[in-house]
Image (cartoon, rainbow, N blue to C red; front, top):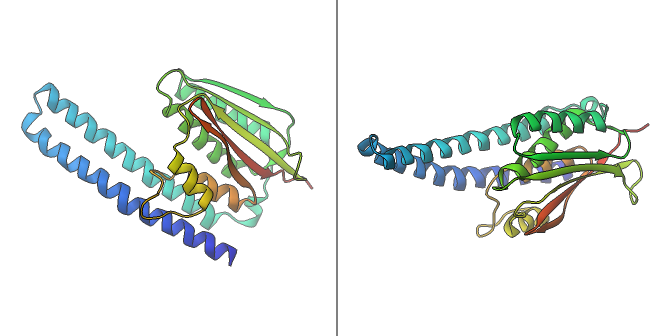
Length: 227
């Protein structure tokens, strides 16, 4: 029943995102393209083209996140769920790659100990959270990843992703904490849902520890995989 409920939740969110976000974004794209046809040679025409291009890129990113979430949850075997990799290796891989991709961002990591964790799915979650923190900070983003053994849960590690950005919108936090969406309150993307589904699938928990105007801290509590 737990797995059935989780599957229904995924479908509910994906259907809503596809209905609401994709429909609205496609309307923006088609409207801008119509304007583009008559104004292409003007500066305003180029602005319309850039906006249309941006929306198309958003749609591609949205569909990719939906694909990733579905693939992980539907195809990951029990053996893969319990495969082990050092958390320090996973974190440093994420930090190194994103430093190259976003040279304007300051990324830090502080790993207390090198405990074993599920490698692939956790890396996807960390990349999503760190990337999200970077792209939503219009100044000079600073993001840190720390990890240490949980003081309240045996054989669990707590990974905090902290940033100095504008904070996670209230509706995003409430939707995730509630565990489902409504007609009036729903998230604008799949990013946090993707992380929530994958972490839960792996036997962990996702928690928004801080979400103020001075930054956010998102915590992943994950089984260590220790024997």
